[in-house]
Length: 225
Image 1: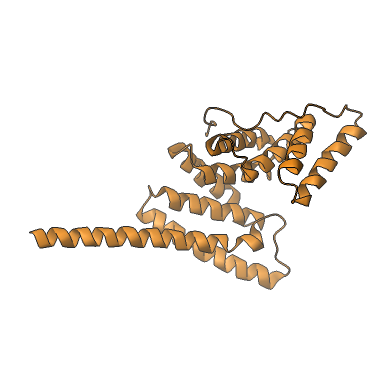
Image 2 (image 1 turned 135 degrees about the vertical axis):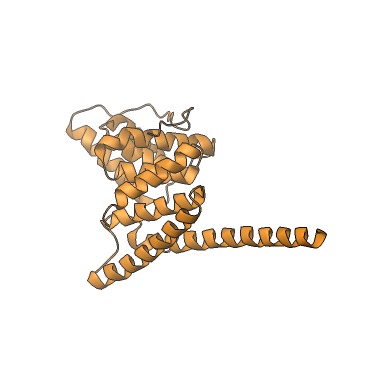
């Protein structure tokens, strides 16, 4: 009887370790696609490159589908499928936007403190639909709140675009100023700051002089429909 219990314990530990390794392997393979389809437009110079990425994408999606079919409550696997489909949206893969949005929202309904899901869903929404910029702002604020006092670059950058696409140009100006001061090594932030500055000048709006940036945290969880 004791030997049987030991065997069950060993098998349980083995499968837990195997599942953890498999999840980490899938995440690493998804992340390997980031240099190619991590932003829009994707880094796919020709049709051959697109076909190769499509094959890798579809193989990963099929694996994640099978894993979720067997373990529908596996939250990290659902996050990974949402993450993958968010990348798929960047090269216009059919239904990728809806799939990503559905999976990431499902993760956040189960765990509103899931930081990677907050950031991925915020980035998906702010970069694809102007009407969702306000909801993306909530997601980025919630992500920063979880991070605490240390600035979270992905959230702070996301807030800039959320402000900009909502037409909150004064907020975007101050956010651009904050990005350039906090991460001066990233020259793209200076370009964003100058872009908003030119918009304010062109529309004859007074440039904000309040250097206080009150965007470190917003209490409460964002509403995830």
